[in-house]
Image (tube, rainbow, N blue to C red; front, side):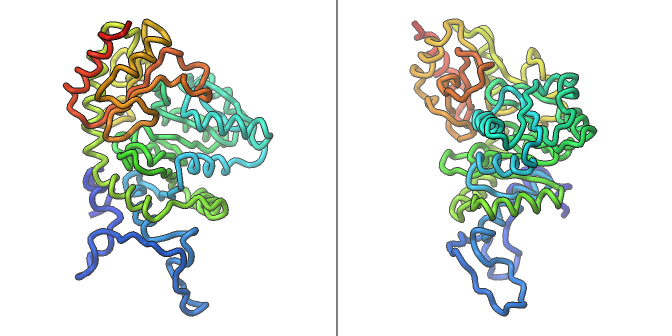
Length: 377
């Protein structure tokens, strides 16, 4: 049956497996070999050297590509995937980026702009009028939706349309949405970026990234760039990521449901000034999120604290089930004050606490947050 006729949960389980040949393994084995037999010089072989491709990596890429509806390329980390996509921009090209987003992307584009490799043009991508003006002469538009950690929602279809009218390609970091909730390629995006470390792998035990596209020319450039940079995924990490991907739809569905429940309960909770979550009707991007996120609004919510920095710090230190640590997307729930990182956008409030909801029982999570909020001095 064609993959486009299957649900994400079914694709996640079955894509990227070996051919169903009697006696063949159900799972692709870990390919622990750096080099492969060449055969005759005029003979075409699938693999030559593991810096270019290996069976474990291809199996993972096949599964992720099927979920996103494109061709996936794995990278050694999410930052490696971001760097690979940014390399698509010609030297000195104008790259339009949002003012808020993943701090690694902000740092990378800032450094590239300072060195003269690109011209970075910062604009609020949720404001389509401002975006249209900023795209004049641009070669690339970088989107992130929901944005980390403020959860801004950008209209993927309209933003992509505006970018293409200006001759720019569109790259969208969809880590917070996952292929389960959003397939950005369906909305006109040219390249999708994922930190596979997060929900796709889902267990906080590996570093891996990916870029997905339907454009054959872009695919060739990404693949060539990965070979040159040596940023390919390791076989064991690829195997772990594929194993995590198999259960991603179940994990994402559970975490999204819990995140929405916690977001609703935190409204009006003692010490909480505001709750930021795309699933709330009060979120400015809620209506857009409903059109491009199917089955949930993500597993991350952010709150700001009435007591400012000290209250935000204390909340993170008082929790008992939540883990006070950076990152998102694991089976365990994580919490942190984002402005403890110097690379975070200046637009992120000092009192903002980002909460990544895992797969624990939501009542246990609520009791933990409640007791921590009550203990604030």
